[in-house]
Picture (cartoon, rainbow, N blue to C red):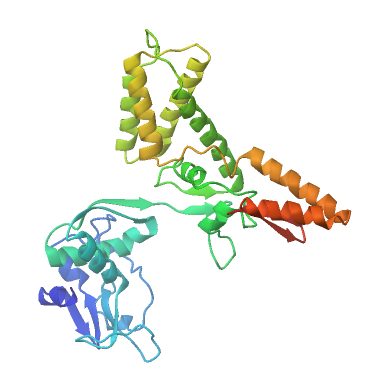
Length: 352
């Protein structure tokens, strides 16, 4: 790819490194088409690398970097022993596995410029076609209203959310609950991840699943008191509006309200409407949102309460030096996939 870009006159080699010529490219294409920026207004926003002074223009970016003696990433090339620029790596991988043009490219909002802008320039120079039809940029995920960062210790791993083995969340949460929580905000919005927010989502998730389960037992009536087709159209309209999952979820809870009214004999659906209603709600809950109809096996408040009670009984047994009972509680919980962990501040548990 680098050779092709050089041959077309949009890259140059200096001192063993190869740079993309942004100004030359911008004469025939719009560099900034994704971010809406203009070359003349650009403030160089890329990683600080040795040899930046070699570039013709500050906007130019590296396609290949010559490696110094200490650099562990180094491969032979026509220009030097070195390594590819990080923008180039993505263009090469996407071309190899997805082709010269593909539908959807995702990424964080912080990658829109310069990273994705550079991908477009590189790929279009080689293929002559627009590489991506739709760009989807997600916003940032906060943890307890603070930026996630390993340096501050304010981060959590996915498996720790599911197992409960962390000091941030009050208990384990299922993957379906976490997924439901994520989709209560649009992918372009900042999302604040916290135990309180997850517990609220868990309650909403439980109400939704309870309604879906009850719907299977609903019998058709002679008349309908709910406009199923209008509701169905609203669900599709929400997802067609830039994957507006929060609006979709609000429509799903409108359906929950109707199901509860049917349960109380305050609403009814004909056979045809009931069939469409069932198919639609199942399609959006399970196929589109990808939720799982759990019976809250691992993470329900009842199970947590029972385990907490057993932990309390085990503590009392240890205080009474009843080691046999203490060990029996621990071992039988382990057999059920529940691991107890004793610490200075008490006993916690995780589910495996």
